[in-house]
Length: 367
Image (tube, rainbow, N blue to C red; front, top):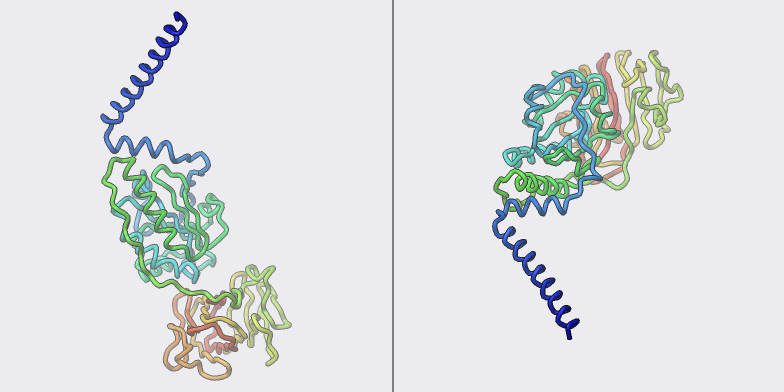
């Protein structure tokens, strides 16, 4: 009997202790603000041990829409989207409407976008050229010129474009290469802004609708990018002429009518440069058989170009936005120009007759 009494007493003490502990816990919860509870939940549910911190922005040659001092101050406690891009890259250009829209929509909520301009070609290192592109595409957020790729290397990056998003504590929580995944990216922005607001005791806005912009539809199969500079063409040489590349020398090229798809062919005398070909003779010609719905060229220096498609003046149904109604394309500043723009991917022979000595071409890109 005595043992039964002792057992009952022990059980009673244990039950009382449990009830007391629960009462104390609930009393604490009742006195905590919703913000404190949210903070506790955040700490419990987000393990950041597997995330890297965003590296410092280093080696910057010039700043657009900001100064070094302003940028260092502005980046604190912000959700930061780092956009690694270069202004003559068609894939980068296609992402800009989304990025500028996100800046307009979320900047006041704590999003900071930083355009890290890491150039592919020498002319893209000129701040005046980058400034023109910034104005053309309506970029209001800070852009830094990473001319020696030091920030590119700090991020261990290898691609254009690439977007990294860091949370308000500086941890990289999202990483996307290339175009696309715009809705997924924007949802991450919303999520990280919500985390930031809860942490800083700010009002949390309800989830907003996503930016609605028609996305460029790539073809499954298309001609790959074609480089004219001997450095860039190394390992992916698609110059069809038998004369081939001859670094830093003038080469007189002659092409035949028998051309291979996805290769470009030259006529005339062209200087072989590291990043481009420059026309030396009075006239020249570039010819290729491609499969795509869109063809672009990256050029510099003044150019008077006549555009032919399958041996005839390019029809308006296929003329790119930079081609005039007379079938010509006139280049001035160094940038990307749209030559062909059709509704579907098709096989055609494109000829560009160049009537301007000194004209310089860097690459063909396709969509």
